[in-house]
Amino acid sequence: MYAIDDQIIDRARVGEDYLQPLLAAVHCSPHHRPRCLCSASETGGVDMYVARISGRYVLKRMPGTGPHHASACASYTPPVELTGLAPLLGTAIREQPSTGLTRLALGFPMARSTGRATAQADTGDIEAPDEVDVSKLSLRGLLHFLWDEAEFVRWVPAMSGRRSWPAIRRYVLMAAETKTTKTRDLSELLWLPEPFTVAEKADIAARRTAAFAPLLGPGKNRRLMLALGEVKDIAPARFGRHKLLIKHAPDCPFIVEPETLTHVRHAFGTEFALRQALPGSKLIVLLTFGVTAAGVAVADRIALMSVSADWIPFESVFEHTLISGLIGHGRRFTKSLRYNQPTTSPLASLVLTDTDPPTACYLTTAATAGPPPPPDPNLPLRQWIWNTAVNAMPGIPPTTRHISRTGPDRGLSPRHNAEEAPHSTPTKEAPTWPTHRTHPTGDSTKNSCATTSASTTT
Ligand SMILES: [Zn+2]
Image 1 (cartoon, helix red, strand yellow):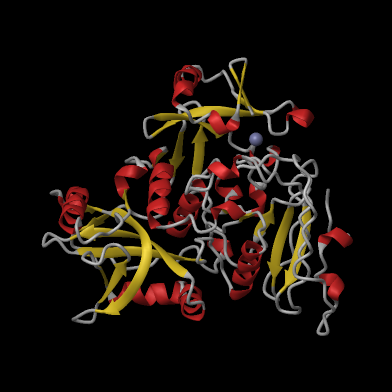
Image 2 (cartoon, protein in one colour; image 1 turned 180 degrees about the horizontal axis):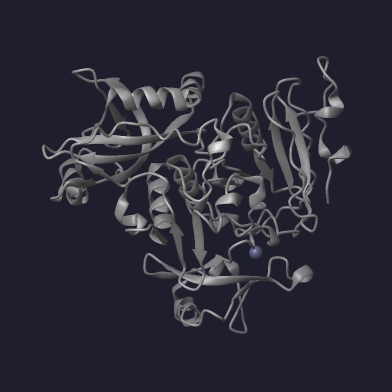
């Protein structure tokens, strides 16, 4: 439920047309805060604000308040300190609730001299912790930010089978609507291919040509744009070059210069290997590109991200195993993303949101440090640790939060805004998965489930 202007509004009805005038009035009065009542019994509710997206007024959480919502609330987010987002807030990413806009500082060029070679990958953030620039977003950081903002990091069972490219495209574009860069709105810079149909092939190509037209303007510096999509192939082209093909855009290859390909193979070798090893996975690309006077699209910088069949990002076979198992067993979680941070940073892999309190799950190896201390002792959070270099996966903490079977999940949109009625109809506790087992190759206490160890923090 929400409290808006002394009215109590059912969460499931807040998107209905009759409430738009009320939300518009609140939008014009930025000091008037609606409140989410998901955890009202403990805190009196959590402040929200009204933003205007795609011509409609919507409620959004205030910056930094995600962990203060109940873990079942659609506005809940784990503490940002568990992800690579924390050091970027207030520097590379500046949220402005008064306007509903978020200013982004991009750490890569969106223009090129026409006489200059353009090829290189987005390598500045890979395996070089001392060189991470937290004042600007890398290309990979921007890809993670868009995925985060479109909420494709969040999973509840009702989302199963509901994610597809049209939904991904729609919500990534919506996420971009309220973001600005130093020179232009992000929505002016970002292109995602329309879902392809043979019948509309000509119209789709015409709209794409119109979208790329600003890249052909006069001057020494050519503008660049951003393209986001699922990689179909990177295949040899003639004259020593390659072409990157994005699904749904078979007639729009992006030329990749040899130097760019070398950088990409070095920086994203893991992502290529994961795509080959896990046939059901996908490879998501965010690239900057220009268009030559002859109309050829040429990639400038390239960043890649592995996602599962359900479009959840992952970084290793171990993480894919964890995610697939959780999805298969009907669990609820929020995936953490790395942004600019190197793989050696001890970030949480994901946070289980169906345990009480939420459980931060860490995957550690010999190369990574152990998980950091809890970011805020006032925010209840348990830890679960899997040292993948030593042991098989330890038991997953069982579901301890009671989930309503008749809640608003029924009305789930293809996106992800599934919501649950917290602490409503009690259900039988789910079994632990996988079952606890003995670890013949190591000390099981190092990896044990936080429910039974000193690593539990509440
Ligand atoms: Zn809430």
